[in-house]
Image 1 (spheres, rainbow, N blue to C red):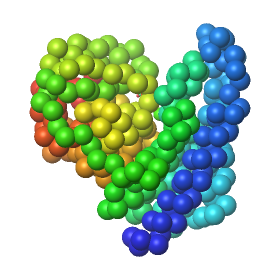
Image 2 (image 1 turned 90 degrees about the horizontal axis):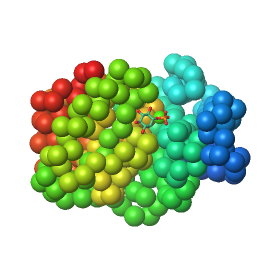
Image 3 (image 1 turned 60 degrees about the vertical axis):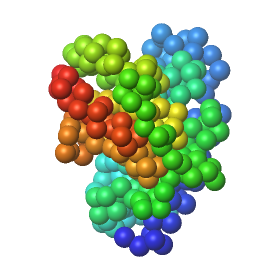
Image 4 (image 1 turned 180 degrees about the vertical axis):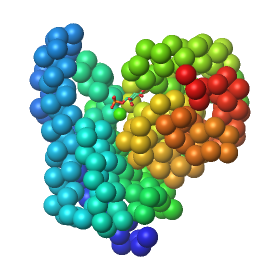
Length: 266
Ligand code: IPD
Ligand code: CA
């Protein structure tokens, strides 16, 4: 994994995310929120999702035709270069639908299976988070540092919920038990932004069960490169089963609590 390759992938990811973010911001119909309960509004969001993913994969594959792709809207190719792009064309789709600001474009690049570059573009905040493996995490020109760990009781913890009813019921039970043990809970609606918020100290910790690789690939690298710890169940990597991210010192108590509560199963 050379520095030159990582730099090339970062430059491409930044430009692809910038273009997709601008497309989504500028092409979102103004009355989408008003029509939020109508199927047509949901269709528009699906169309925007697909348009964003097409823009990103088109731009990246023109520059690097042999790379693989994994995208939420169905892109799935192995490629032959050892590089695979993991893309969430809109993370925070429900927020986008309702006109709430917490939505993002998330693009990660894996080299030989390891996430080497992550970019999360948040148009409503005018912020672009980025990280390169071993080189730190930044928002704009500012190098990021996760917040020094408070005690679990003083921690502001983000979380999220899946779309399937049975899973949501289990997640509600977990959060019912976590809430009295922490300062407060936030449900922002974009896992990628939640992980960036851990990276920049706007959240002390974050957990969620059931994320897909495109939700967490870029954000996890950004959180880790900012000095936060990430993982799943104790001793395991962050995965679909369970995602935990927190400033060092808070990470273990939070992970332990989630394990005891059974946050890793439905
Ligand atoms: C969702 C968001 C949300 C999280 C869900 C994800 P989407 O992604 O990241 O915060 O709680 O688990 O599915 O559907 O908006 O791309
Ligand atoms: Ca997502």
